[in-house]
Amino acid sequence: MKYDAIVVGAGPNGLAAAITLARARRSVIVYEANETLGGGIRSAELTLPGFIHDVCSTVQALTVVSPFFRSLPLAKYGVELIYPDAALAHPLDDGTAAVLERSIDATCATLGRDAAAYRRLMEPLVNHADALNADLLGPFPFPPQHPLLFAQFALPAILPARALSELIFRDDHARGLFAGIAAHTMLPLENLSTAAYGMALAVAAHASGWPIVKGGSQNLANALAAHLRSLGGEIELNHRVERIDELPSARVYLFDVTPRQLLRIAGDRFPTGYRRALERFRYGPGVFKIDFALDGPIPWKAQECARAGTVHLGGTLAEIAASERAVWDGTPAEKPYMLVVQQTLFDPTRAPAGKHTVWSYCHVPNGSTFDMTERMIAQIERFAPGFRERILAKHVMPPAAMQAHNANYIGGDINGGSADLWQLYTRPVARRVPYSTPARDIYICSSSTPPGGGVHGMCGYHAARAALKHLR
Image (cartoon, rainbow, N blue to C red; front, side, top):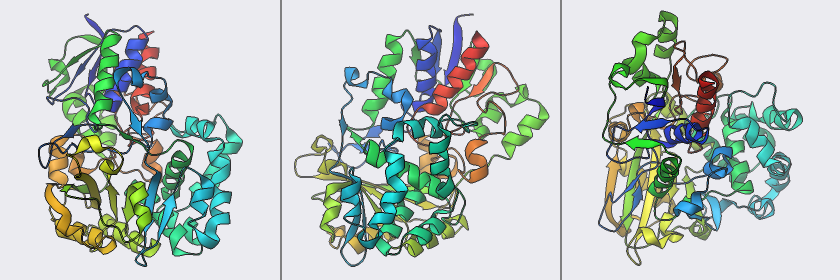
């Protein structure tokens, strides 16, 4: 038997699993279907020559709080993180904006009479962010490592984001800011657990910032691969795995895939009950993504937006809630909630001198074929009149194109499955060790396991730890 472990998929979780195994002196090889590795952290010249765009993930908010990534010598492999002046801006129609700064004091200065309520919610969590993330970035923490701190987080976090915002905030700035962060869940803001995601991302912004990778997210993927190879691990690109029987013999197999692919590849190895449970796994909304090449920066009405790496567009809490509810109900939003990232304001290496890249997406029903291009451009124009005239080129990726780029993005779902309260910690199936399967040598290490989507590597790390117990 040549390998202790075979990993299928060279996304951040697959590479994290392989590195964890290799650090334990296990022989491991990674098979990747595409000609480039990285999964959700790949970069390419999507619009014009010299304009480097991140094809999926671009802001590494969870990378810098991840215990796994913090254990890696990324700087040794040339990874440089760039921290925008502010993590996030949330503009409103009156030309003002709420700003999520590294400093809680500076953030509160943009929130008016809601400043004290925001401080009460966030400051105790930010002061103990590392301990909190140790509980949040893994399977359900029972019992939690830090029970009092976890309770302090969980009591407000269990509420829907809309309910929490309306309960503790009074004005549009704080309500809109929190709604935009919580909407990263791709769930209606009336759903339980949406506040948890908003709080966790806000804590990350204050504790560690929301950085981007200089030169493109691909550099992070390349560093992971280089580190794996330095540990003796192997990577084989352009090797699509259709059936587990095609793979060489190994003691364990780890799959950085979602339940749908796992059923196709190894479904006949599982008992009927487990197969049916995987078949019931629910995917969430998709994304419609546009990358822009611009001949100048976005001309925001709210000047504060020019200090932020990320800008959330959608207006008030009520507007964002309506947008996300429409998507969940199967209707593309008229005025979509959008994520906009303006990397070249802080990383000029990504575009020719004086030019700019913009990364943007909105949520759409899973598998939607509706063209959101004009609605998205109009939404940016709403908060930045003159934006349209600065577009040199654009590259559009509807849900089908997202799935073609990364087979894990089923119907454009970039989170590896719906992250509602039930499925957040029981992904993909309710099991004591969610990374394991009834086939003792098969594990799943994708974002379809806890803690879910995001570039943190913790799904792969925890899956590899479970596999190592079997190997011992």
